[in-house]
Image 1 (tube, rainbow, N blue to C red):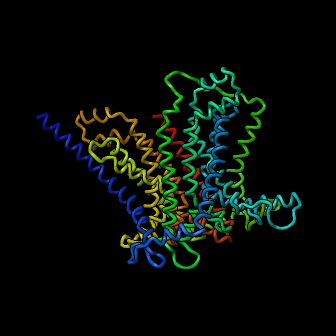
Image 2: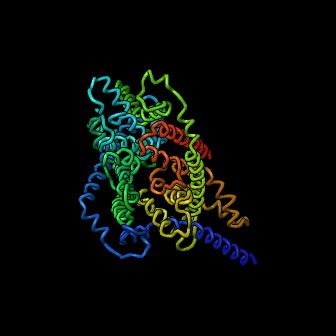
Image 3: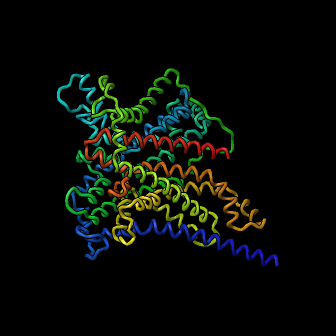
Length: 580
């Protein structure tokens, strides 16, 4: 009798696992597969005057136009120069900053590490807007100050942020904090005994760093370089804000312009063909990244033996190091944030001055509350952030659990599908989502906030599933087995044992997704309509109009404040998670 009951429990447990599997599997397949399939199909359709699924001929004309056009190679050159220069510059700065904080006796290292993360709370779109107000050739505050200080004639320059070097400069500042997070652990955990052995052998300090330390850190440095090179090729926000009006195009902005031309009809087939070029470039880089991570054991330097990190004494150079960190923070956060605050408090656009202090006003903030479109954007932003965070974490938790705990063939398929998104650039994914819901209007969600929710949920599944998978791995299966052995059903075990242990990680992931949904611009700009406008899209739209700098600055400050608030809660959630 007991054996029959045990078999019944095992069948119920397996049925529960399959039920938990089919729910996220169906959702993930629906979210991931149709956009990519339709994107590929549309490259073989003539869509100059029709949608991809409307009747029309199959053709290779889109690819012929892409690869026979001289513009494609200009786009490739601009994209590659932009991505390589910004990522290499950011990596060099990040390596120096992490080395100073983790390997030297620079004062206040922990505080400095926290301060370096502040620029993460300023979205790339808003950082680009801030630098356009600082270094625009005609009205930029820095240019106005330099012309007055140096007695330069004319009303242009000497700096021009609307140039390829200007775009690279702002992108470099934006990539540094994320790279610091990615490589800091490798510097922190490096065994100093290897460096001591090098110096005992007669090598100088600089030779040791160049010949021992950096070569052994190659996996972390290469991984950061490859990952963020793919990210830079995907970047739309900074090149769009600073490059479109100056005639500087990269692949991401070309795709956007093909779907939203100044005149005429959008050519979705041509846009999707450019998108496939960008997708293939990103796929190659992601595969290189995965290969690099699979070879990490060749460079393992941490063993079971005890070791202690050794701090290099900077002596009088510590003040120069502090000045360097302060300079980065000034350029990456303080200057763009300050100019946005200043412009938001002025009745008209004017460079900072003593005279301007007498004109400080909240008129721009009051004007925002009088705009019906702004009120709708605030409501839409809150709705999108909350629903995207909740839906993404629910699906990713179930997906990760079935991938790691499923006891039947194919249980890891949804998890594999979520990883496909890592190779799809945001601008390409926004285009793919557009195709699906333009081609199948029966769903009636194109132009509503629901298409934004679906798109952003799909986009963030990769990260959140990896996060929850890492948390589930830490839960020993003995806990679940003991619960089931005590008579609890699989659902009861999942609800009362697994979920409570996972809650800190779930909350941490929820806040991460909410912050990124709040500040996302690339996908929402691709999918925006008057009915589904959110704050980031409204900032983009008003900035492109070029006549409402005060309102744009005021909206940017509100988004930054919301980002800081959610980032603070994310930090508190992380601290609570560590207490478990």
